[in-house]
Amino acid sequence: MISGDSRLMVYPSYTWGLGRQYKQQDGLLINYTYLRFHQQLLKRISRGLFTGIGYHLDYHAHITTGRDKPLLKDYAQYSYGTSGPSSVSSGVSLNLLFDTRTNSLNPWDGRYLALQFRFNPTFLGNNHQWKSVYLDVRKYIRFERGTHRQNMLAVWGYLWTVLDKQVPYLDLPSLGWEEHNRSGRGFDQSRYRGRTLLYTEAEFRKDITDNGFLGLVLFANANTVSGPRSILLIHWNPAVGGGIRIKMNERSATNIGLNYARSLHHVGVNLTLGEVF
Image (cartoon, rainbow, N blue to C red; front, side, top):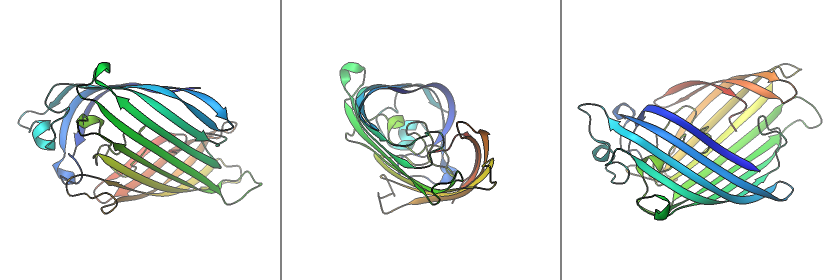
């Protein structure tokens, strides 16, 4: 099985340094071009269990801040990947995947666990050698079995941490930057960044109509990050929200989702194809 995420993005985007270093209104707008090329080759070992290797490239180019704005290095008070116009992270990974979901676009039951160890050596183009670990766990609990009506609770959590100090700033664990960029409803992308990020979310899903054409969701999430003025597992950042689901394809059970979420300092509305997790 081949799994990947490749994209080219041109940003102006806000950043808030590490931890809770700055308040919401003190974010710094930065411009950059981002190339992501993540590919994994996985082999099935048994039912639902896969293992394999991967290659990951994260290239940030033309990193600048606005005129009369502080340099990213000075603002973030972080030396790696902030002083030059670009940063490169190029590495290989070992991957373990356990997935018993019957439908990844709209899971009704099952379990999901993904574990990745990534190693970025200097001979692959990195300025400094560094390593990271990413653990993603999901569980789907149905309240009505033997029916085609959706009435369930979905739970998601991930832990993302780096094991070395010399990691480029834009490649540090950051909210909304895990694989597929789905986390952090109710927050700005990149709102919290640090050497370790722990994220949790629970979502209640229920059909409104008997045929499942309309549905609703209620969700809550929270994250904690290490960094200045933020202690992992002590300081949490919560958000809540809800949404409407419209079944676009009955055969694949693919939904169009409209979500509203809010945290202490931000309100967000987004449109999704398929469930967030």
